[in-house]
Amino acid sequence: MIAACGCGTGMSAVDGKAQPQPLTPSSALSTRTTAGTPGPISSVDEARAFTDTHGFPIIVKAAHGGGGRGMRVVKAEGELEEAFARATSEAKAAFGNGEVFLERYIEQPRHIEVQILADKHGNTIHLFERDCSLQRRHQKVIEMAPSRDLDPAVREKMLSDAVRLCKAAQYVNAGTVEFLVDTKTGEAYFIEVNPRVQVEHTVTEEITGVDIVQTQMRIAAGEALPDMGLTQEAVKVNGYAIQCRITTEDPARNFQPDSGIISVYRSATGNGIRLDDGPGYAGAPITPHYDSLLVKVTARAAAFDDAVAKLTRALREHRIRGVSTNIPFLLNVLRHDAFLAGAVTTRFIEMYPEVLRAPQEAQNRGQKMLRYLSELAVNGPDPALGASGPHSAIAAPTVPKLPLARSPGAGGVCVRCYARCCTRLGG
Image 1 (cartoon, rainbow, N blue to C red):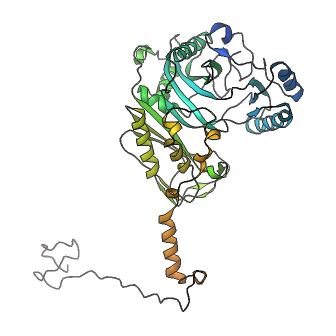
Image 2: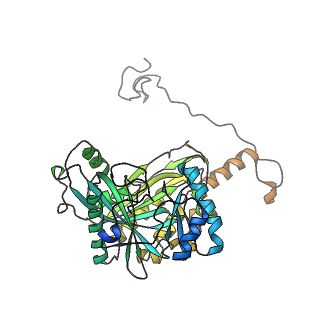
């Protein structure tokens, strides 16, 4: 079976994540696939038949969509019925189809993606890999390229398998081949193909210098990759890139989405910083009806630690007021010892829940002080704080007057151009 998200086109042998196909990666590729249902299922009885054979833990996945929706991890028989019902209900609401499929669940994997470009002339290349392991609710939060401390042999397996798979499927355009790497065994498992440009494509663009979106359009117009200077030998990795997704969510409240009006919006720039922004600006209404992503911030540097430093500085310089954001959480992750050491799996947040707590420095002291002074000037000291007596009188403001000259040479200025050297004073 070849898996795909069903969100795009360009793969003649793929139609939906759980649709059986004549290609069989487990026999054609060097990476393995996890045990899974041969096709989509729609009843809990079918799910039980799978677990009777393969056991637990398993993961239930929506068959016709992605983005972490319609996914549930089931660790025991007693959890199966509720998890299945929730996953199918969420999948139907999000994608219009409640079908799901099941896979054996790997406890602490790294989520590795290989970016692919393929043209209509049979040329297929990879743009190396990116690490998307840092997730919450199966939704990626921080991505980096290339992956750190990855076994070179495992990396080469995934890169070559991604190219071989897309060639066999006659894939055309940009796409992503996704793998899980079991941190306990080091084994890589193929999971799916996403036939589209993904949110995290920016880190791949930054380390390779290849504009993936533009290249996809040129491929669609019929151009060949070699004519664009894109051969496998020509694509090189240059440094490290890390991307953070700034969202209007409160991590301290289980990433509860926030809504309201953005009162202050100031983004950061600088050498090696890329912003892919969305609905963020002062006065912007943030409603609960759309995705919570405000802006993607990507940092690039020659060394990983330097990329972290640039990204940290950019996040600290962002000022977004009026709605909650996940910036304090992102900063906590970037300075966490485990993250800096490269010990990141899909269970990072679960293993280090301290990253969810907002640090003291994240409090909005400036806006709170302005609000307090305004309240004090208008309403006087707060009796609840021990104040007594009448409110202070508010003095009428004195409006300064512009000094107009009475005669040339008297040190005055022209009423037209305000230049002291002008002789047309008064006129």
